[in-house]
Length: 606
Ligand SMILES: [Zn+2]
Image 1: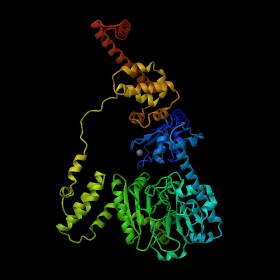
Image 2: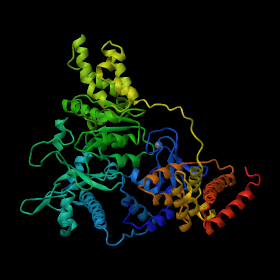
Image 3: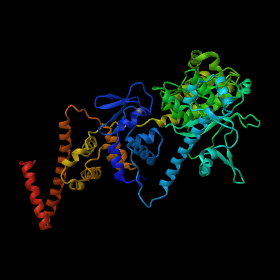
Image 4: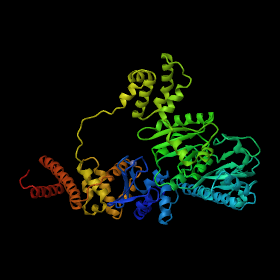
């Protein structure tokens, strides 16, 4: 339910903010005629088909069909819930969101979440300050310098220092102890005492897509452990008093590992257009690459890259390259990444796989060979299909029928996991060539034939009908809401039997009682309803504006014809009743007026 926040507030807010400003802050827009344009943030494209209309306060992508209001945009792009998106817009407009009294505890919960973000921001500030000020921070600074990091890159990624011992409670205040436990910054022992999760570590703030700190990663400071290269796995546990080499925040109300990628916010800040994203294993890899001016690396956080991660990356680019260490752990991680990526690859979206020489990680490798040579390695990354088949064929040495059957059996579950038909047939073709069989035979053996045939939509051969009167009226109303004031007595239309008429009447009445609503505010009134989805689609209509006058005439004409239809069916009904002599005096008067009108409109009685 959209409720809890009064509708009048949403009306006013949506009328007050400018969607162009909201979107431009996240996706830079260019003016194009009356509208604004950009390459769509929700699908991949090289030429802009994403448009933002300042008059309708509505965005629409002709490529993928994404559309909505400013609130809808924030929900999609920043992954916000409805109330959060409203909060965000209210902040931009400098107003408080009023919550209706006597409702659930959600406002408090929301406030609590806001407080958690503030708290994390304060932890972040504290750690960064310690990196500059703490007496023991020089070890950390020396370590970072030793790794070739500049102050500029360290600042861009917000690196900090967690000193030895327990400090957070003292630094932030005892009253926050519970919230610090909730955010995973403190650990509570059985006896109720708490201690800092991160002690004597270099701190890496993990930011969400809006740049808010939601978690931390911490790395032990041990100048020696570079000598033991290859141990740079995200949570490679190295025994010892200092604990694991890398430590992440646990899952918290703010942080969900499977959803966040380290470095994504920073990459988006650094690059206007992201043509490729490189997925590496650890924070130090991301930062070492940034130091060499490779600003498009991200890392999953102590977990394999999930389908949700890959989907998130595909929103920004169609070229995702996974980079793995050449050791056994790296190869295992690569295969997991492939499995997770399969359901979301296809179309123009590709994932590729890059393996570094044994004993190297991106950090050591890029320092050794430099940006250009490293980027050349990225260029040579294997395609998914090459990697897929080379891995599947491992251990199948026999080039006979049995070997082929084994290969097909191994491939089956993966090919079934693919959602993209075209990509699947490509892999089937390759599989056919490896097994020296024709594609149909392989498809048969995979049990894919039926699925492929069923998936094809049945063409009805019906021609597209011209828009109905109701549709014509609705789409113009959404295009130019002010016109509603020119319709007398919309309620009279309600008796017409035509699909959508009720919605048209509701829209007209809403606009007559709230004449200042723009398209977006109007759409917000119908959020979370079936009708709302229909209205949003109609709002994507972009007529040519060469002749605005005739557009308005078309609308008024549609309304007039609807009224006429109503009068005509009413006349017929009354005439039928009159034939049976059952008209009341009132109905007689009505019929008389109707007949006079019919005579005036059409004197020949046609
Ligand atoms: Zn799009």
